[in-house]
Amino acid sequence: MTQPIMPLASYSAYRRHCAAQGYCDPFIPFVGDEYGANEGVKFAYCGGAAWWAEEHDLIEDDAEALERGAKLTREFVADGMYNAPYWRLFWKIAGIVPGLAGQPDDVLLNRFAWTNISKTGVVGQSSPPDNDEHLRQLDIEQFNYELNILQPELLVCVSGSLVPSTAYALFDDPEWQVVEGIQPLTASTWIRRSKSGSWLLWTMHPAYKPRAWFDSVLADVQVVLDAIAD
Image (cartoon, rainbow, N blue to C red; front, side, top):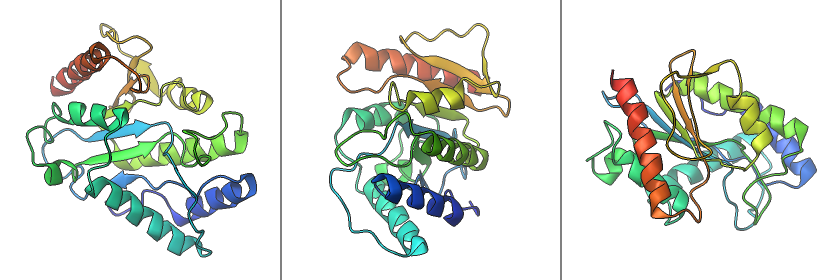
């Protein structure tokens, strides 16, 4: 991938707004070095917003801060993330995605992309305010930029009710079409296909969900994978 997943100009615009609103520095999406370089399915996993448990010292220079943010994201993934419902669902999905399933962890983690609907938030909270219109526009523009670069075949978004205004602006859009004959098994879930061919499964966040819910999501993912394979 030759294009940066977050351009410096976009990062700088986020930082100015984050500083003014008291948000954390922007989250930098992760793209594995072998994403799209094999015969497997191009899989992108998406949440609502990254979780910041504590404040970090701000680096004054935007380019340096961007480089550090990207490094922190890659290190987080390389370390195996952490044992949270969000990542437990990821491992279950990765276990059935062609090109990732059956691979050693280091190979698997180099073949997917990870992003979030919003790229910032408030320390100790799982998402930024939903009524921040300027942040929403930044997030929409950045997310669509990412999709244009990544062109995922399978986009699984588990943002649930986090930043819903941004998510609806992104996915309740003519770009994403309802697919006739495919009805998700999981409640509060959308399955749609973009005009460029990407498949979207948008569902709730996996926190506090029973095992049956996880099984239902996996069944929906398999339906989409079967459609991709046809």
